[in-house]
Length: 410
Image (cartoon, rainbow, N blue to C red; front, top):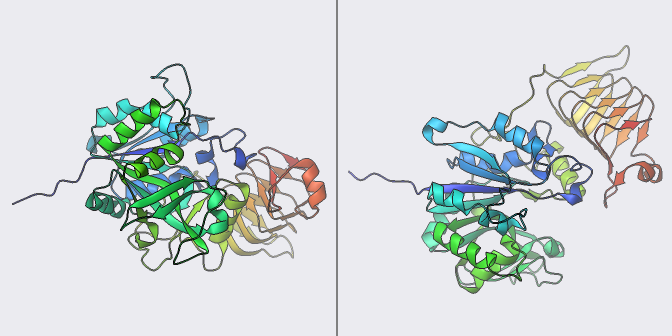
């Protein structure tokens, strides 16, 4: 009898980005540690996809403002070490000299010892700040069948968004004919001129191909040492790079759900991803029990909706987390994170309210992202007068007002 031996894999999650475009949410936390959908952190989606697929040897490469991220990983992602599973955060160790990570490729180069110690056949390299479902087993299956050195997960996006992504020009079969990182101008796909094929920032490498490409890039003084900007174009040139059509990936229990992936690297994309969740028919279904998003919720009592005198609660199209109390307030098209309080007569619309924020009686909050521990005074107005909001707070390009952690709105 022959036994099937699963290929040895190591997963690297790149979590060292500064997240400048998400400020003020990233003023004192790493981008992958930014809260999402009430009880999650952004990194939970990449880690859940890998863990659900059975790939449970995971290192998270961290750098900027990583304390809250490190704490989240250590408390939440405790896998069975007895069975060889682990999720561990790895800061810049300066093994190659006294410097921080110069880019995502340099982050891997500085940690090649981890690959050597684990001795995998294949290495997943995933970003830490995307919202999506992906069964990595299917991703790896195509990679192995194609004989590629690297396979890049790809999704179609509108051509006007091309400058935000690495753009793939398909070659024969699944080969990448050309790869351009964040091009200013690009033609659409021949069969779909309004769309381009974009990299999702998720890759699977043959171990030997990755090590060779990383070392070659490290020796190139003209490189910015970025996986998408340098490694992938070099491997396209050598004929080793293929792409994987994300729309063919079907996670267990999600066969009827449309493909969904969002890069939440800006305040507007972060906001839009939340609005996708609160729609009557959500674009991203988090309720698939066969492919859950794992996290560690706070130990709080159930949410509570209270009539305050003659005032009834009116909560619609809203995600409500543990410990929330809405007392005679109105909440619509919003996300209420753990411990939020909404007092009598308050109105919250089209907003994301993070942990332990107090929305005072008779106040109005519209089209806003409010970070943790903010106090909105009774009768205060936010998201009503954009000029007044812009004098005090950050305004996104799309007109969303963003209040930093611990603020007060009078």
